[in-house]
Image (tube, rainbow, N blue to C red; front, side, top):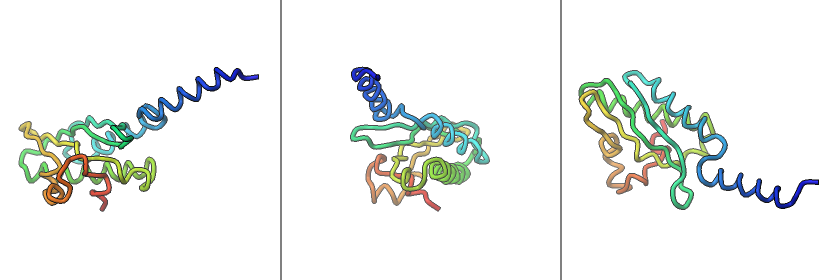
Length: 142
């Protein structure tokens, strides 16, 4: 017979892991998103992470580096990276599961070290959302 205290302890541990963002699938999603970003032409590295914030809002954030030298090239790479991240997230867990994941804190660094953020990529979102945490993966659906 399983001890009640042991069973409750195990259930509490599992719930804590899932609610803290350290649950099942976090590592594989993170790897899939980084791999998708790194597979985009012109990307030299990706450092994306996934997790949960207050009120259990899910996010993907981090930075991607590119060899692009001009801002036009960098923004083109940035758009391709976001499309690749969306496709990888949807493939990993399904559109309905991932579409509301915050994505506003993904930045791009070009070859000169200049940093681009979501407002550079989609300036119309700044007026519409006003905050980076209002930018979602679904904003980049093709």
